[in-house]
Length: 248
Image 1 (cartoon, rainbow, N blue to C red):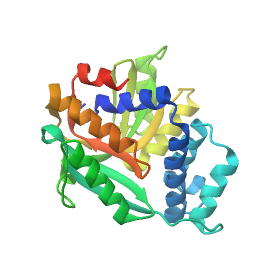
Image 2: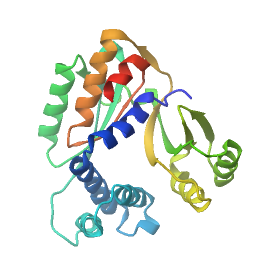
Image 3: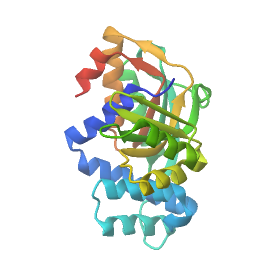
Image 4: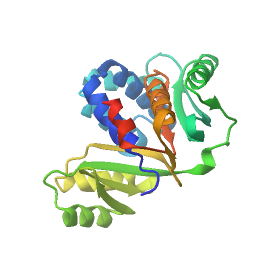
């Protein structure tokens, strides 16, 4: 499937291996706050908030932290006002980068994102310069160990999934953005353990990046992912296995 970058799987493994619990909490809290502000504080009627709450629970975030984040979003508690800002640009090898952030200071964030790009062989582009190279999709990942392919395919498609792909020891299920939560719930009800479920920007076509350029791009992706204000980084890079192995 074009656009399902191996980097996505590496990111999940790296997050576990590095145990970046505090930073992960910060990103999830910001997402819950913004989701509650935009769509209300009831996860049952706010699919985006439900996904964020599910992510918080998967990360073993205390319930009181979840409730505070939601109340800040709905205005029941005072707190910092966060804004969603997308930055577009290019990395080594000419790959497109779509960088989603949540920030309380746009000037600080754009300066720091530009610095990371410049330092690692990339550059910041204008709004719309790379967005056309991606499609928004729902993506659900399931560990393939002990899972019957026919069973998961039937459950996913019956729930409204668009496609199911297998590889590298996992199943990747794609959905329309609006049906991500519904498909996720159907899989959970069927007893299928889910590794992750999120909305992503999937590249229409991938660009192969090898050797030293691949290593530079990897450093840039890691630096962006490590920034507190950056929620997700999407690229159309197809990094080779030798480069990706260095991330772990």
